[in-house]
Length: 587
Image 1 (cartoon, one colour):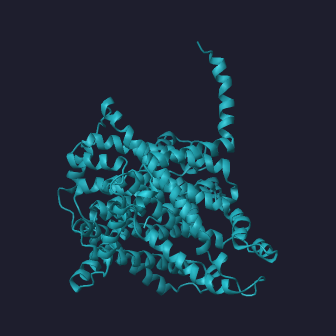
Image 2 (cartoon, helix red, strand yellow):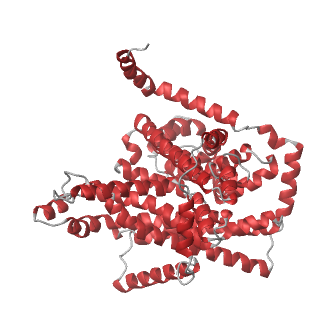
Image 3 (cartoon, one colour):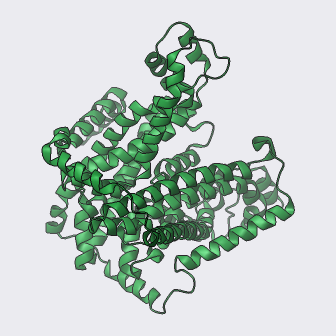
């Protein structure tokens, strides 16, 4: 019989062993190797005669795109619905996130904090604080695609389900960001108000929100960009928009229509990125942007235009004027059918295989995306490929070829991230058939496009002096990248990679909807057959996976990354920003 004292003495040794970087690296390598085997990764399958024939048939069917006036009208309407879903979902997220974020701020409700007070309602307020933090965690942990699928069953097909799904999902992220920003503001104004007898409401309205408002507006603008990207994906589960049209055309084998829709989707993504950059420049201060601030009249016009756009989007998403009397009743009945979850041993045992396959698809897909992104990132970086005027070093043919290589690399990355994961699944199934390998390829290709873009931007921000010293010493381009650029961007690059893994874990549970392996197919079948108690069990399982993954990723960040990874931001707020950026580039 084991002695409890002996077990307790072993615990610190085990923790110290697990804290070793070499042990963590070994465990990570073992997990990735297991993922490749479990996900049935077979590079040779892409070069088989059947795969090449399927890809050839698909490529021939995609050209020329369908540009008939009738179908172009369908495309324009689908793009309009996608924009309406994204804007309406963001507006709903803001309405939910602000009060929940205020409730989730520790300095306002934690017992003993300056603004918490000491009255009889302190512990009740603290309970509401814990509840708000729990609700926000659930909102952001459940993937938006899964929210969309649940709302499709609850309220029916169409843009209403997509807007509700985005509102719930992005409320979780924005609420967390709101709480982190309010926690981080300068406390001096709050201390003055509290010392003069100000209540919690006064501290929020007159001390915290005025300081936090500029950063909150920036996050809302970025979440709007991300929500429009996500809205194009939700249609694959029946939530309206351009994704629904792509899925319908794929099922009808109308590949020319798919080509047109894909071009429209790519154009929407690129236009969204360009518009986001312009909005950020326009909303920046005069010191940052170099422009004079907007006049009062211009601000009023912008405000009226924003309110008008939100109202039109709410109506286009069928959240205004389109709700029938039985909507709330249907949602309530569907929610009631989800409980209690099915926890029978037989059903839980049946989830073991799909669960392991989901983890393997996420691991192998992230590994593939990282490898492709590492190859393309230096080629897409302005700092690596274009020489600034007056920079020392050699010039020659490379200086002429480099800009064209950079354009091609950026175009390829834009194409990879412009096609959503679920569309990649449909395309990869044509080549390798149904199964987890198709899910790995889909996650890998899309992840490469996302990571390649943000890693290239990270390389662009590194100081150029070490690169110039290496170049003056005769170092080749690969040496300058490996020893001059990557070490400076290591922390930020690793942070984005870890956050993308978390996002891929969410998505890998859903690629099975279209045949990509994992829990998705089992979840989809349970919803279609009305086994709602099984659906809630799988949702809770996905939620647990995401929470566990978040904890492991945070531990790896603390162990491996320097504080400079956050570039001076507080840890939690920066983590939420990175999660929004790395995960929000879903389109």
